[in-house]
Amino acid sequence: MEVDNDNAFGKLPDHLHVEIFVRLPIYEWGQLSSVSKQWAAIFRGESLWQTAIARRWPFVGQRKRWPGPIPRGLGRRRYTALYVSEHIIALDGEIDELVGHIYLYLKEQLELSIMPPPSNILHGTIIDQFISCGRSRDKAHELASQIWLAVINNLEENEHTFSLLKRLAQEGDSFLPYPYSRPYKVLWRVFEKLFTDFRDCFNHSDYCDVLACAKSRFQPIPSSWLGY
Image (tube, rainbow, N blue to C red; front, side, top):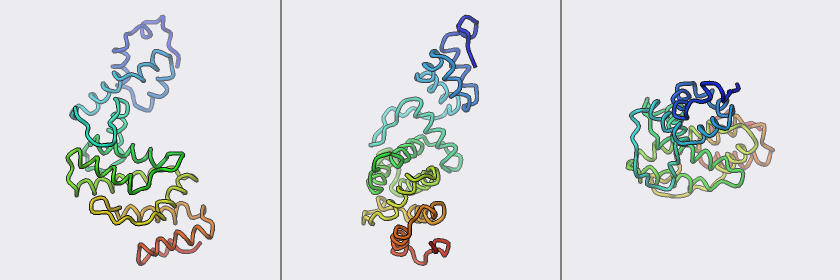
């Protein structure tokens, strides 16, 4: 798609372009942003994303203070967090921007090309963020578990993810108080993915090591996890 800056559409002011763009499907935005330098600048700016948020989620609160260690970010990141909350995290139809931000934070940390932080540090950061934003300890623990599961289920199936899951499976248990203790169902999902989606990535030694970790945590273990 090309735009002639000499025609009427090319001469429209930016605020009218924004009003047009936010009415188009989101899957077209990437192509639109590469049409011209002017349009690329619009998609880099705040106006389009703030307008898109107001149009799609008009009842989202404008929280003036954002306490806790995980940053909120500008309009584009807020839009992404809200989209994640609506489409990836199952919240019974509720839109929770905080949940979306924490999902993005955890996924980015786990996908670092260098060694990600230990899972207990990441989990503690998530719990602290929820509590600092007014969630109860029980709700923080429940939401953190949902986010961990959603992130693990949406990691790409590649060598980095295999190494990451293997590390999570082999990390020693940290005897931390509730709600900072690692969720049982999250650790189960880590082993389940390793022994199903990544079974062919194991060598014999690694398989025996990870299986021994599984046996030390879960009894009985599923028969589908057995048989290298």
